[in-house]
Image (cartoon, rainbow, N blue to C red; front, side, top):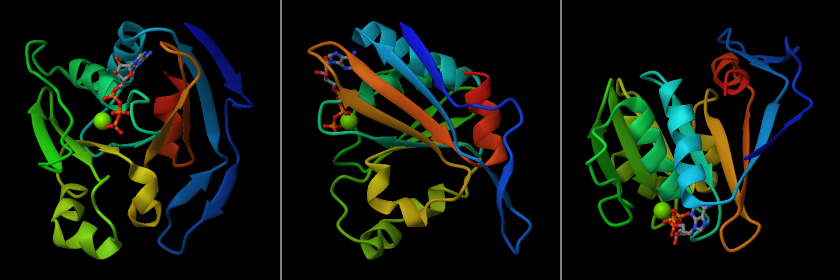
Length: 179
Ligand SMILES: Nc1ncnc2c1ncn2[C@@H]1O[C@H](COP(=O)(O)OP(=O)(O)OP(=O)(O)O)[C@@H](O)[C@H]1O
Ligand SMILES: [Mg+2]
């Protein structure tokens, strides 16, 4: 597993302060290359172990890039029983798993518009006491809260994937720095 950290300051500077008092820091990024599904699962598990209820993981990447395999690891890291089958929620839109807190696994590939997102009820999950992990999250980026942690997958070979983590919210930065 190769890890390269792209300018990631120990104390990122404040980039934006909203009227609500919410603060965004300079974007922190971490890029990790994996060479097998096992490594992808291990990386997801490492991220999952550092997550708490309220965190939001926004997955981006083409079909078959590894978003669901990564989610299997996140579920393990959250403490979901290893024998639980974590599969793509393409048709159900959301699958729920239970570890140290609930894990809501969404796939918004089939939703066409923000109206679909609201009418499907998925928006409510963003307020639940659990971790949300969303495949194809870039489709609805403006609807997602700022504390989202982006995880972007690029296919770089038959078994290799480049995975770019990024975030600007203090909570996202905290998670990324410890990854
Ligand atoms: N390093 C790797 N990490 C993850 N998947 C890999 C890797 N190498 C090969 N693969 C293969 O790529 C595919 C990834 O499938 P997965 O369902 O995780 O993709 P996905 O991004 O969730 O796709 P979709 O957008 O259709 O939901 C699987 O067939 C898996 O075996
Ligand atoms: Mg998937």
